[in-house]
Length: 515
Image (cartoon, rainbow, N blue to C red):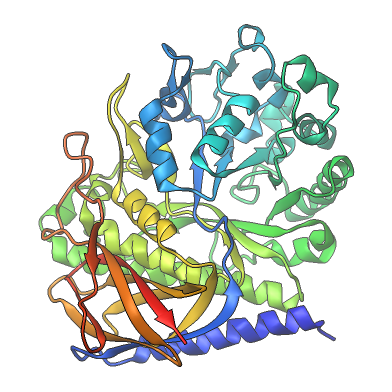
């Protein structure tokens, strides 16, 4: 029999699903109402908008380029930009975690040994280690999340190179980070604990056939969880629940929950398969430049796969009566050329990203952590932040601009959109005295006019923060770093709260309300 919390969670998911179905089927007639039910349905996770940092070797400057060696500190403009981006959490790890030895990244800098970056090429100096990464997170206002070396996810070559990390090594990292009396950390001159609460076990463990089997991964999850929580029971653990490649293979989440669910706070999947399904897609290479409006339609088609993946994992969690959340700790558009498609500089992708983020927020009863990009780098277009090298301007890509807009203008509780024009994709939230809407106009040709209604409440004022380039091909660069900065507007005074959303725009609406 379900306990009260489990029953309420299921009711919340069902209620939101009903409201979203109404939204999806609503008429798109100009001037139609956007109707909001202000009753809170679930609490939004403070970690919902995540960024993901990984040393990418010779493929992208990333972490190494983010460090200012003249100042012996993080690049100042990167700190300032990221603080404004306001990530709830920053994750360190990825494929790099399979051969990362945390002991090599602590203590005196001149004593840290260099290491080979096996996945991405080149040599890592370990100039950025635990202390530096936590320092970055604290300065930008995000919680640190570390991806631990999970026996190299079962990849035997790293075992033979003595680069695999076992449960004891992971537990020692927890002690180093969180034990107030840890001798090693205090010997390194850090008296106060870092209090790192978020830890992920492994990375993409199921991807490929050269690593752990599902059974081995689950068994080691239990082993690692017990060892790490023995050092600090307050930490939150994220276990790997995605499937092996292949449409018919089941998620690992079910067996993981059966055997290790009591130890886990979240189940991780990656949203890396966001790639076009059309045989003659315009989203490969530069073909989109000849027919940008058709490319726009293809991009909007891709969001359905995100919704389906989240719903599938929600169903597994519900069947197992689990309270665990969902952590999408990596995810971005997977277009060719790999990681460097220039379309990601352009506003063509802006509304796609807004729609993806709205899906995560509408499923916020389960989704606790999510991202739509990698974090910072020098050449990968899947980054949220791009940096000039060796120094210069850092700027937000379209996905970063949308993430910043939605994170800065958001409530703490998810609420339902009961009706809206079908051209508008909306996620809604609230705080005491305020309702927040994240709105993407899916129509690239025409504006959509609406009247806002909040059931049982009066709208006394409001603002709209709007990104609305006139050209789908508008592009950001170091020469025009602020081209996608949101413009602040005030809702017109007078009878009714009305607004017209420009074509292909992304907006955050703040409505002041009273009962």
